[in-house]
Image 1: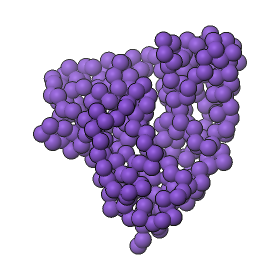
Image 2: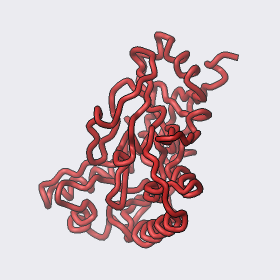
Image 3: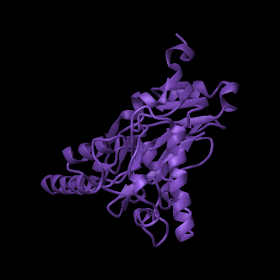
Image 4: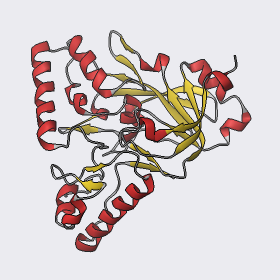
Length: 291
């Protein structure tokens, strides 16, 4: 059986798996389980020229109603594993942040408690340099192992070679993040668990729960909190309707399932306009919207 018919899903419904329960279809989604499958796929000349999208947990990505006409990659198999070595952890890009945090707790590895409340995957985390509670993934990262589409090779770059910044991680064109090498520091298991529970309690108090939600909509501008800018710029109508801002946290929105992705995009644009009109600040989206 060829990779074409074994691993390919056509007209993949992103709305079915998205945290927002919204989004257009992906014309060609390839499920990739190991490095050989990835190299074989991009050995074909036709795949190198098409638009590329790598999807993880679909917790922070929204595909517009028109859909994505290109090649999407979803890493599985070998890329869902965590290996502890003497001086680092090798973590697959498809490993969920929450799972890595629990794995570290089980192995008495400290420093990854903050990941317990982040809904994405390690690949997306490295791409965005995600973080919370004054911690970012770059603080723990030793190097990134990635696939270079142009050369069809697997390469590695140390964190010192990369320019990670606030919500800007490994975003080099024509690459696919495969693994991260992470620091190891052992700690007291009870203290690790206590910190995980503390972060979860904070999240439950300050963020909407059990609703369709993608996390923060916007990045915080320098010297500003996005939620404060939003709250001071909009009226009560933004807190009602099929797409609405959360009353728990104004930088989060909640939406009904199966709603138009384009209407979500429009809602976000309206918030940006209100904030810009009042504060002369253009909020930059944290949610990734794919045309």
